[in-house]
Image (cartoon, rainbow, N blue to C red; front, top):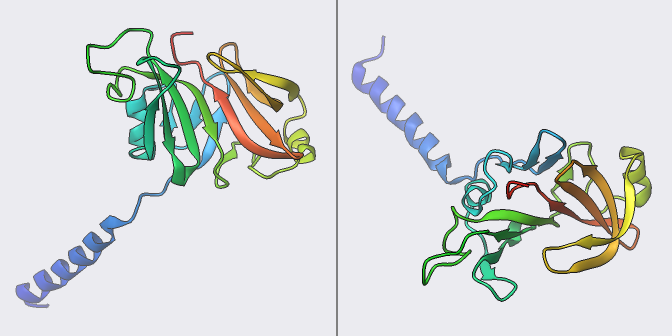
Length: 190
């Protein structure tokens, strides 16, 4: 049997080796799941918490946040390395000096844009897949020429691949291929 000091040294060495790996980022999911029961984008479960604060818990601090639509009640946050951009809003006002970028626990997601190539739908549709592949995975998908944003109509070629009564997940096409996923989650008590 080894002396206590040797066992302690070996344990300390093992702990040190494990601690060095603590700088690595945890495994991150890039799967999008949207149906009647789930609105999940990677580690962000929108049904559980649709707030900007919950998005930060899932994706980390955003690359930037800026106010949108000329009001303090709307913001747009972007996580460039992940290829995620989200528009947040609050139906309530903010105290003086506060806004939709600073009050992260008081705003909820209204629109979500996903462009990163690592992302895929739960059935396997990825950025870059063709319309043919989309139709093979989503036979009941419907085509739309316009997607309605909060204050504007966004023109383009969209395939609705998951719709519920209050939410939608669309594949926006560019040159016959999936260019991005666009979601209008149910989050504001819709």
